Amino acid sequence: MKVGVLTGGGDCPGLNAVIRSVVRKGVQEYAFDFAGVRDGWLGLLQGAVVPLDIPSVRGILPRGGTILGSSRTNPFKHEDGLQRVRDTLAAHDVDALIVIGGEDTLGVATELNGHGVPLVGVPKTIDNDVSGTDYTFGFNTAVGIATEAIDRLHTTAESHMRTLVVEVMGRHSGWIALHAGIAGGANVILIPERPFDLEQVCEQVMSRFKINYAPIVVVAEGAVPKEGQMILKDQSLDEFGHVRLSGIGEWLAREISERTGKDARTTVLGHVQRGGTPSPYDRWLATRFGLHAIDAVKDGDFGMMVALQGTRIVRIPLADATAKAKVVDPSLYDEFEVFFG
Ligand code: F6P
Image (tube, rainbow, N blue to C red):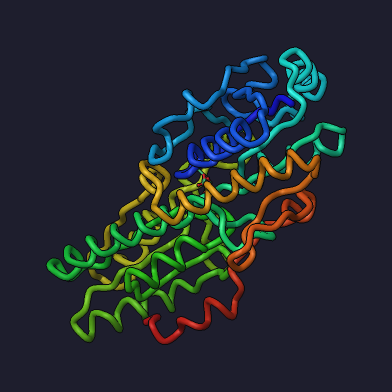
């Protein structure tokens, strides 16, 4: 059996740990051969497939990014995309694929599997918004980086008695904002799931100044003001057709500053959240996902995604995992009410 491995979408700490784990178990336990697909689905459109074996995955466990490269290519947006994918798999004798990706990449995997391509999915994304799994790998690292940034911003905010707004990633979901905001002691946390009232944000900012504390506002890039629209720097689209986010942080600091009469500044964490070495937890989770994904291939259990439920790794249908994004439950957000303001 020859197994192709592909990483798609935004990079994420732990991708290499999955690749290593899949290859180690696949070669050592099952005597499988492997092929690395370059740059996500683009590699299958272009026939860019490279050898993958145990020596090529040595030393990659702590490395961020992906040794296979990634892209936001959607083969179904290309003419003859499906046929070109099939041709590449056939040309390289690939019998099955392990697809490591977030909602877009796994959405394509679901569709391809519907067309008969045998594959197993592994959920990755710092955003933690894939359904059916308690956590995706990469999220823990991103929360750690964002929390450290917030800790550092506290001291500047307090020294200058100004509001510091921290914009974190999270297109449809506020998982990073909520976790890092709570861990970092923010007093305003704005998430896409809960449109915010600007007046209330300003009141919360002022109430912090009144007790001689500097406000820290954590905002997810996809957060929207009530009766408003998503705030964007520009209207450019990525390859998958999503508008590129970021802009809300700058806008918010400007509004807070004008409405409160006090200085407010913004830090946009951007790709810093996704870069660098994975946390121990993400290495652990990514390694477990890899081991279970190759077992699913061995069992011929295609069209499935490995998922973390409690402490167990289970298999769930890819179609269920990709039907809708996993967002923050309002009751979870409300738990922290006492810290806001
Ligand atoms: O990986 C998902 C994500 O982190 C989103 O939160 C964000 O909108 C997007 O990636 C940005 O990715 P890029 O700028 O690399 O396309």
